[in-house]
Image (tube, rainbow over all chains, first blue to last red):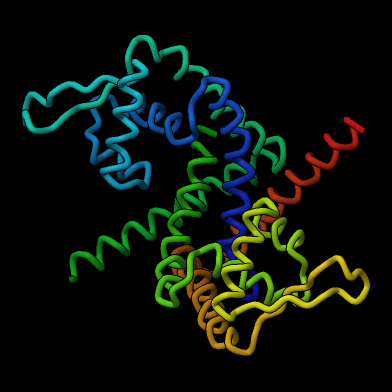
Length: 147
Length: 148
């Protein structure tokens, strides 16, 4: 098993992110800010903790990220009516064109992968990556339970 | 294809790196320092430019990484006999047990993927990632040729 899979994943992720970074920069956003907008758009009302988990960031840096995006008028925080200590995050009306631009960028990257690998292999790659992440999440959940 | 391939790649990479980071930290090394040691092990005599390209870093930050690893006594520089302006990088004797640990961490991560997906699907994932990288590289070379 001489290959370094982590390194292969690192290079592939970096190549794909390079394109996304350029498109996010056109909107004056960093990759993480752009990703946060997409996540909030996909799950309106997501909590700060939920967003931190999906971005694989800690709560403190996610909070700073959201403060910045709130100042930019891209995200708003509402108090969760079921638990007033929690905030719910939403994309603002003003951010809608930006979100739509970022979704286009995401689709363009998917198309790029399709162009480079062909439809069958591109779908296979996405499925294997999902399977890998699901299997790890399951084994981590099992390990956490047994601890 | 409804999935976000970039995000999947990025999450899979981050997951694999989390394991590698823990193992590197046990040896008091950052992920990049650990990766640099593995690169020099794979290409003894590599120069700073080559190492920078392999790590996808710029030359200035790679020089800082190399300086730090030399201070730790893990790397040594030798003048390239073919071009005295260039330095070649080698592991020190002291680095060998550390590199063995890092190689074992790398193998453990490979095994983690194999355990999660099974042998056939792991091999397929590996082959698809390589095809993707070759295709990206091919496209970049084409773009450079068109600009020239």
